Length: 145
Image (cartoon, rainbow, N blue to C red):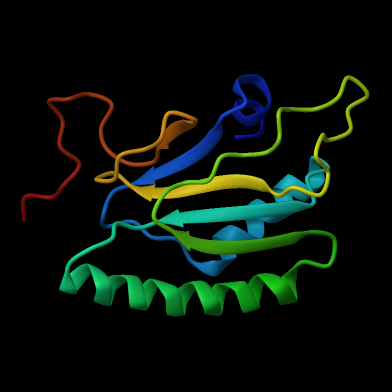
């Protein structure tokens, strides 16, 4: 993900199927790994569709989970800062890579990592990283019973 952000100046997006969601420890571990690469501030943009009664309820549940996870991230990160943001679209990273000296450009801007359901259209400035599904179109990963 770091290489994608550095080399292509796009925002990496973890694209997940509907049955996959991440726990707080996933975000803590990922932020820790970024800190090991001198990236001290990370923002996870959790994209969720808007509109409709049921989607509004789902977004309310997601907002509660985001709040809870942000408390966990705040307690866990002494060497780094990470937070989750619920959004309708993935943000565009302000980082354009690393300086030749190896120091991060726009040091005060967070490194943005998107998390999006596979049903949501992504903006042009993102690079999708698909996390589930079969690389072979004829193979289904779902159990038949």
